[in-house]
Amino acid sequence: MRADNPPICKEKLVLPELEHSYRSVVLVGPPGVGKGTQGKLLSKIPGIFHISSGDMFRELDVNSDLGQIFHDYATHGKLVPDDITVKTWQRYVNNKVKQKVYNPETDLLILDGIPRNIEQVELLSPHIRVLKVLYMVCEDREVMFERIRGRAIKEHRNDDSDEFVVRYRWDYYKQFTEPIIDHYPQELVRIIDADTIPADVLNQILSALVPIQKECFSPPKM
Ligand code: ADP
Image (cartoon, rainbow, N blue to C red; front, side, top):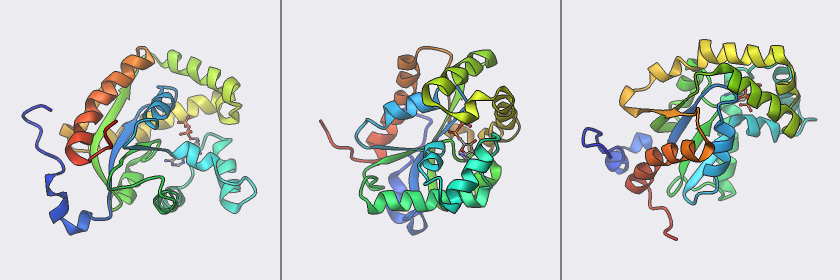
């Protein structure tokens, strides 16, 4: 860890108001940048719990009211309203804690796909303590569109198969998601070059996460 980075977790036990805020790292990047690939790899690591908001919604029963709401928004590439999203997220995380698949005492939470805009940053802020923001950058838009087209076929995702929807999501990202980077203290933001092979991206991400895990958690040793 760089000498100018203040210790991030030492005070957690003496700040009661943070008791119930999940210690988190936020992954930010445009659709197709590789967040999903990295999320899957990270979720295999002991002491890391990864939540993708897209997967969270896709897991909903399509016949439930919420499942229907999601379906109506997602097929048009539209985001689910912020209050519904954050409430769904809260319920989802709380369930994971109850089911003992996520232990906030020992696991670092990785958020992928949420928060998506400033409103969500604010709605989530009482519930999470952001330890790092990993900003995945790939300047070549066409590389990402190509990845999304591949994903549409491989994962049978309707929302990825419509070119108009894909471009709409990209515009949304540029207009509303990217600006959340400026909303966080800049010392928490780490740029990840995503225009390279997955192993290299993972390497960069881990070099940001491992010091946090060591400093703030006691992950099981192998
Ligand atoms: P992508 O990153 O390609 O947009 P996701 O898998 O993250 O795909 O999301 C799929 C869909 O799930 C979105 O189009 C949206 O309808 C819904 N969704 C996911 N995350 C959020 C969020 N944070 N806020 C609102 N809607 C969301």
